[in-house]
Amino acid sequence: MNNSDQLYEIAKALLNLRNKEEISSFLQDILTSSEQETVALRWEVAKMLDQGIPYTQIERETGASSATIAKVSEYLKYGYNGYRMALDRLQKKSK
Image (cartoon, rainbow, N blue to C red; front, side, top):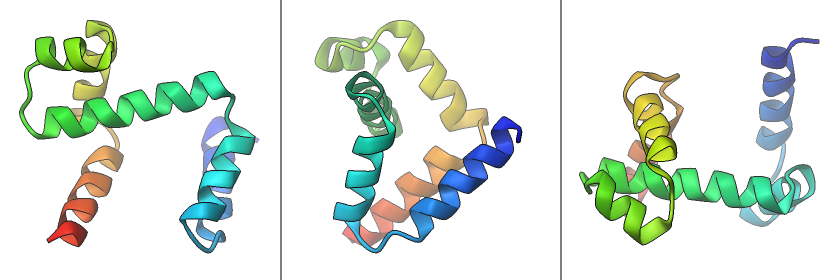
């Protein structure tokens, strides 16, 4: 099974969970604490970039490296559209 197949399998598992608590439990089980911190940091960086916050401020406020910020920015602009979909849908729900 290749990486893409494995990601689809994980996506199917997530879709079968019923609520935020179940998803959170699954993520805590499948990710190490370091991986959880990395994912949470990248998500925070994506939200800040989406708000137009400058790299230097993001770096100062989050502790993320400029390389991490640049990578998140690259995926936000040219990636698989995952960040964009999630950010847009959360923004719609908050209105």
